[in-house]
Amino acid sequence: MTRRIVLATGNAGKLREMRAILAGHDLVVLAQSEFGIVPPIEDGDSFIANALIKARHAAATAGLPAIADDSGLEVDALGGRPGLHSARYAGPQADARANNVKLLAELADLPLVARSARFRCAMVFVRDADDVAPIIAEASWPGRIALEPRGAGGFGFDPLFIVEGGDRTAAEMPEAEKNRVSHRGQALMALAAAMREVGW
Image 1 (tube, one colour):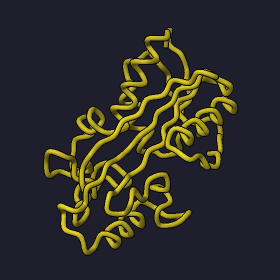
Image 2 (cartoon, helix red, strand yellow):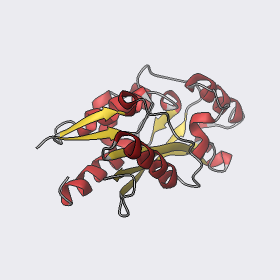
Image 3 (cartoon, rainbow, N blue to C red):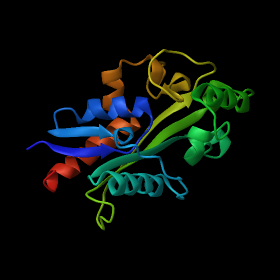
């Protein structure tokens, strides 16, 4: 039986990624925009807390089970920033380009070896807005920050994120490969496996 769920994101890149990863799971994945859902204020103190805020809000408005993620980039030389504030790093209305420009400026004096970083992701599934036992999965993706943007794929900080074990940025990886190994891909695959274990 095919079941409908709402994906609590307004990010087109995330939506595309997550739909690709969930393909074959017998789920009809609907974007929250299809229900006119306005994103809630993300004022949690962790990636999990923010993901739960988004998932419960989408489930309440759409009347459907919901999946949400919260993710961000942690840069060691910046004490873990931008972290929870990755999407708004350069300001409330900032786009990816502005965020990338700010990151490069903050790291301008550091050599590549001192630019260790990681993407983190928390992914949650709620059956309804009041679900007392949400399914939660987390993952991280280590790498370092490039000296300049490279690649035309991905979104967000992907053009600056050199994946550990190689010299390609996330934006230079084929989409299917990135979906398999990224923080979001790992978390969503773990979430999907946990959902199947409980009948989803």
